[in-house]
Image (cartoon, rainbow, N blue to C red; front, side, top):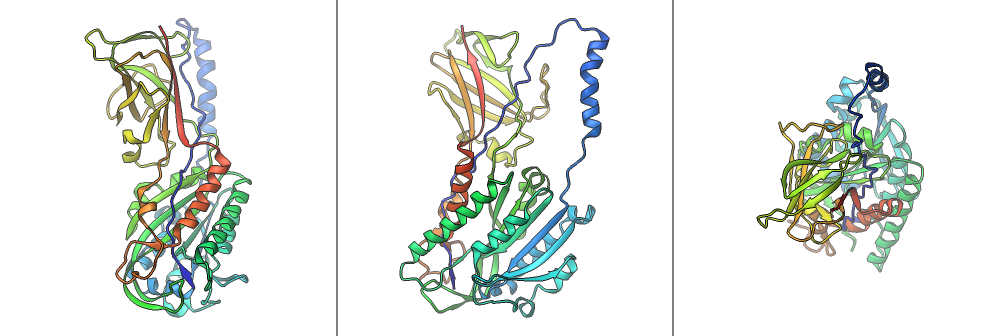
Length: 429
């Protein structure tokens, strides 16, 4: 039997090697020099091949606790929609579908390699295979994680409930399961890049709910379930944007865990909307010299441009000043906005956003501005420790926090960093 427990999602962490494309070109260059600079770039662009998902592996938990969802329209709609994802169809992406359940001896039942094969099995009769009395979630994670390598991604669809039987100390049992989950993720992260997307969705549930205290309760109401997507960061960013995920029927929330690697977020200070005065260093435009506060007492503010196109976060997240922090307490974030139609000259990249920072105190310092990964509120809000009021509860999941804490702690352990990206500037006299 299983139970839910909602976890605190720690940070999804992102360190970045921020490019500084601020080297000033010589004022006089020959035609040959210019051609020598441009030609390699063109050749590299011509040789670049768009990366594609080679195979998508689908694992559908089919223990008895999932039967209630099969009677719900939203769940069936999402599972079928993921299988028939437009980009998969367009690119003729190879797909494989499996039912998965059971305890220590995990039962994996092959459904087929065509989305129509899966559609034919989205019914209770087909779900009654393998060992429907148990669901070893950690073993499900292990098989899904092991398949998510190179151009192969894996998708696990489950209610997210650890099957711990009937323990006398359920919280201790949950902690043990969570530690095992963390180990499996750390082992996989040690092998290379891996992004994990957790999607919380809601569907009508008409069936039996199995509380940790034993027995079952027949309910007919909406209940949350979860989709985990594992794979290469670049591929998941391309195929599973926030916009696409939010369009899924019954969508509730999303969280992304990322292993930090060679992410490139170009940035550069600009003269746009400045208050006070400064000049750019000849060699480094992120080094501001002759910095002076405004004569009328408005302080000192400057704006820098950044290219966030490689980050898999929604625009609402990127433009919220609450998600940024300055290492110098004198400075604050004044505004973050999309660049729109504004034209900025002298940049070696195409910016997507503008960030304005400033102070009404002494501005001279080495300033770091960081985009943080803040814990999504829905993680904490989804958590309950008591299933006695599960009838009528359409939002909470018992035990979920042990699961998601384990995942976030694994990423935190491998990344050793709490910021998605840090922008560094030097402000001197």
